[in-house]
Amino acid sequence: MATTTTPTSAPKRGMTRRQRAKYFRWIQYAIGIIILIVIAFLADWKAFANAFLNVQVALKMFPEVITTGL
Image (tube, rainbow, N blue to C red; front, side):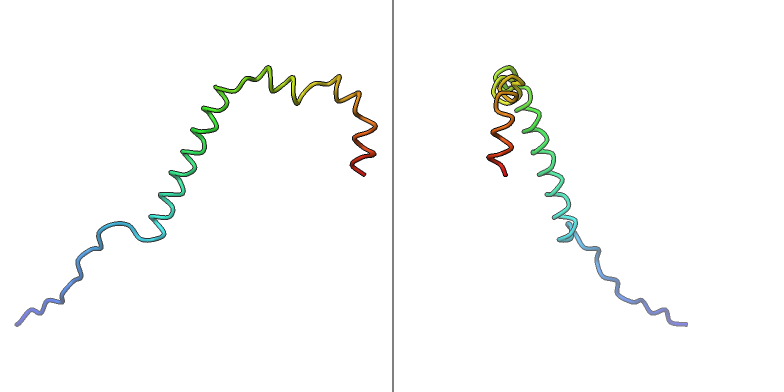
């Protein structure tokens, strides 16, 4: 009885395009999160609050902001 063997293809090395794209996408997400964390720690939050979250200035501008926007 003769045994025949079928040639098997060698397993592919490396990643597929989809795996590579997924890998790089996660790297981009990680870099973006790191950048946001660094900005959050380095930001001058008092200056930001004075410039954008000042309630007195918002109340003074309230009627004009609505009419200008319309």
